Amino acid sequence: MTEYWVSQGNKWCDFCKIYISNNPVSIRTHELGKRHKDNVSQRLATMQKEGAAKEKEQKEAARALEQIEAKARKSYQKDLASFQGVSSGHTVETSQRTADSSKCSAKPGNGNWEFDSSSGYYYNKLNGFHYDKNSDLYYSAALGKWVTLEEASKSGKVTKPDIGQPSAGTKSTGASPGLVVSKQLNPTRNTKGAPSSIAVNKRKRGNAKPKTMSKEEEEAIKAREAARKRVEDREKPLLGLYSSY
Image (cartoon, rainbow, N blue to C red; front, side, top):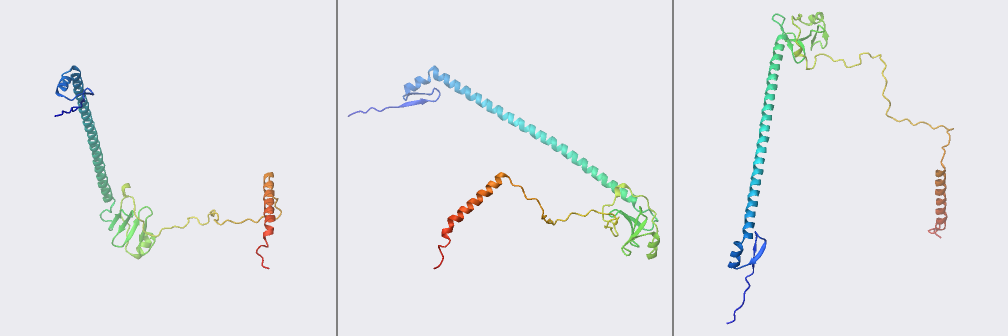
């Protein structure tokens, strides 16, 4: 019986980066050699260094993340304390304004006059009059204008209120009652009118001087006239082409 020779091939050593015979004796001999053992030790040392570097990098990333979170918590606590301080200050200011408004209200025995913080005037619910302490005038919807105490007394029982000066914290923010004068205070003052938006065409003078032309413009006009004349001369024979006989 005929026997055939079969090649066993080669085996690649990943540590030494070489090919060796693919048989047990060659593999065993190579693995027990000094070169292979040194390469294996070097590979293990490299893997260990890479693992240590990776672990160190992960620890540094975790430490940086903790620092960022600590700064964020500190900033949040600072903002929260600032917000609470502003809120408490706003509450104190609101209570102070309420106290000032109560101080500016009418005193007992002043004829039911009460300070209206929305308009900045004192109001009497019984007769419907507003009172302005600065001008010492009275206003009602029935009259439609500001009048003195004498004129206001004619339309109803109105007494001058016994009130104190309002505090600075109760200034008026609403609309004032009565008529508002919107016309000019001094109608006799001359005002300069705005210029008209319509453009006015100016008439040209008959004796206007002719526009001076440069030498280049004259040459361009002459060249244009010569070209027009050449076109006319070339098209003259074609003028009667479609004429009927």
